Image (cartoon, rainbow, N blue to C red; front, side, top):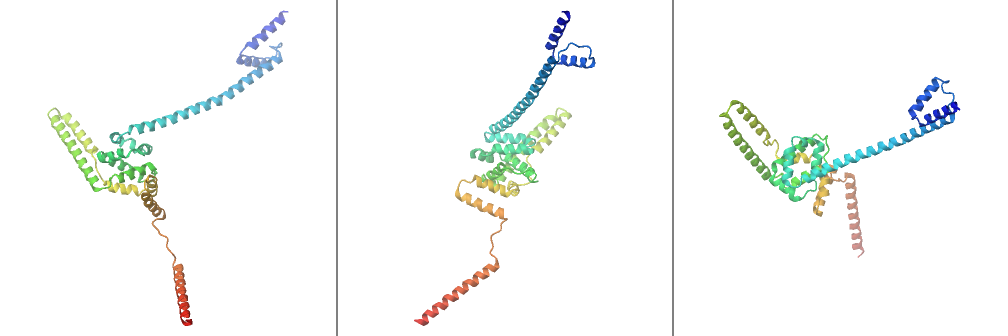
Length: 314
């Protein structure tokens, strides 16, 4: 009786034990085969089945979790990209905001091709009033963007997107290549430099009375002010001409897309045809032209002979 109770207790303890404990017991029985002579083989089979089922369930759950996590990560990145572009487009709501953005980022973000393309895409299809105000009242910032475009796209390593072509086309439409626009730009830059020099001279005279250390600080401020002033190596007309020559076909394709009248569409299509064919016109070969002229002469001679025969008969 006691031996039966002990075996029942051992079976109950083995059934309630965890898989790790059963594995340990199995290893012990394999190493010591005579230690557990009263074990039931049917219960061991059931335990093995349960362990296999638990492992299969865990394997089935693992890829589902990874898919969910990857989808969540992808959705989060898409939301971040979308939110950044929407935020940039909202920020560029008027000409003053666009000019401030260019002034702040023309030395940092606007040197990165990705950031430049995002800027042009945000400026694409903006209201005409905004762009005309930008070209009239913020000429310095427009010129800075043209410089960045020439610096970035002149190597032809970075392709020009349609939004960049649109910026050039709208600059041309708003008179950026005119001499008056460049004169006003140079006049504005000279007044800005004059104001900077006046401020620097005032600070220099104020600091010379205090100490020599402060004078060194003023010299650094004058140097930074001089470097921040606008130095035009190329005129706006030359910049527009050089940028337009980088990808003339893409520019004309964007011009065709932006056309609003039939005449504009025809002129753009004609220019696009000349750009694609390289300015070549369809020429008639000399052999065909000579054969056509001889054919015309033969027809004229036949007509004259018929007329003479008719006159003789009469």
